[in-house]
Length: 340
Image (spheres, rainbow, N blue to C red):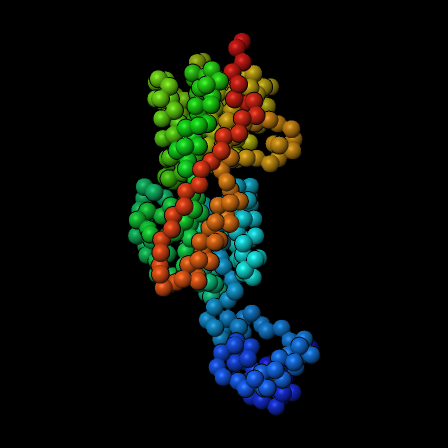
């Protein structure tokens, strides 16, 4: 049988309101009475209900995390980074997966507000091209601090942490060029997102800086999902004058690319060179030495959480902080040009 505030009050000979003031450390209570109540709480092994506490303080010790694809290892790493910092500050997490659906994201935002959470860390589904005033208004009117992670909301002024995607794509594409490739293809992410646009900019910049004309036949517009990496790689290997290397703009599309090459008995890098964006742990475990752009994924999560905590501690300041982290090029040999 659970112990209630009324039980503690009865044992201590005080009112439930007095016990509540001790529990919430609010209002005046005589030191002698306070010590007596705390002793009884300990003896009865009382644990205050999180729901009851939220009703009295209008807040829970919880933050919301919203991501577009929980199955993507990228977001698994981001969540780990968030969780590590949240644990140190005794904060709980409610995780929502939107499956890249705007409607699911709006539903998640409503749910989190009803849960009286303290703040939200979000990788938004919102698109760059089709500005949605209703969506932005929903975010701004939540009355809850919001931090963005690796995703932008057009015309918003939220704090956030991001990766320099132009630099990452430039260095990845240039590494393929320096290895000897002149016909370098790219599989982009969803082009209505800023990270995908920036990665395409970096790719084109690397070609231009190395005096290689941009060939639209080698630009394949993907969607970050494994299926698009698979589909477009199949198309590339069927081309008469196809590319000798592919810069793949997400980890899941890289898996799709590798699957397509494997099915056609094509070797990496002998038949097709590859550099992907973001590390894929399973490939390392399997002994596949694929070169990649290492975005500081877990660090993004931890910095995002720190930004949110800073906002919660200094809500009156409303200082906007936007931090951009630098990616790292990791070459494992899959970028090499093997002459036939």
